[in-house]
Image (cartoon, rainbow, N blue to C red):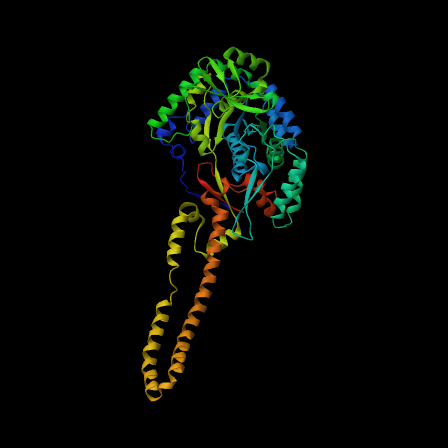
Length: 539
């Protein structure tokens, strides 16, 4: 089997205890994600709700067809028209070349979870990937990292985007010439393989077909996962805005109540001893509004909703929602409400940070007549190559040691790299030579004082020969140590880049360049556990 599990505690305490089913953490959510009964109860509640399934399916079909997805994804969209079809959903920012590996891992988990739940619940459950295309922190998504086989450095390539103001990825133009320069630079650093041509063609063709950064991301995800039925939705699509209009209206009307509930949730989380993931206060409106191309956050001051440029009354905002819903955008709090309104969601799949965010939301969902979906921790994966295993074997080290206590292991290893093992014996040999040779030199000088210079030179030559042998030994050992240091650095760069998990830093496509785009299919079919443990996938 090419998958192994590793007990790897999460750094985020709330997410860790939620995963461990600690009652204190579970009490902040509506369901236990690891109990079968939770899914049946959630399904029962969803069966009593109504959704704009026809309009949703039509919008999804048009978007997914336009980005060139596979018929399997379109088939799943068609299923959404039926009242007994539900979704598992998760999402990510529109990172260049799909961003860090956890984007790929999340899509894999969505597909596997949908299959699993379909079988267990005896109903249709389809996977939906929500592209957070309106994120305007472009510096987070405009670059990729990879670890090259030829050296120990972590490589980085940045796509030079003409970002200005607070423009979101869904509005940021993808300039073909700049994009081709980026891909040229990227592939110059990759080893040419039998897979390079296919990978380059995919990246080039999807880039040339895309008008924006978010669209390029969508086209790549469609090519990689469409055949596995993954449905893609991008947060700024016009049909999405139309369907979200009632929720925007409710958020504006009940803004103060929502803000108070968030503050109470913050107090509960703090009282339970968990670190606070969100900064919330009663003045936050939890909505963005577009002013031209800029996406600006709204806050409340007395009876006005304001951003850095404009001030609105509640009535003005409500009128704008009806007339121009495309000007509104959800924030981290209200995005979950939008998903719940649009999709019949059995479970939301999120990482540790997202879980810590969602701990604030249960009563907010209830305020708007909704129920928080099951929040399922996404699986975490490290890709382990054969070269990694050989390096580890040479150092008598395991992947688990690297991921759990590499700093401790490395400190112990360096402690052992003290003076070479024969250091004391060489020092003793020099002392012995001097002790034996000195009486002889003294006798020579007694018989012929004129030979002093020759005797001292001869004595020094004997000691130099011993030191020469020691120096050659040290040089030989240092060369071996340099090899060991390089091996350690390569392990760090590939399995624990910059001290964090591989999936949070490295990009998928350098792996695809070595192992083929079919690596996605192998991941989708791999026997991963969905229990929150970290998984090792042996490429």
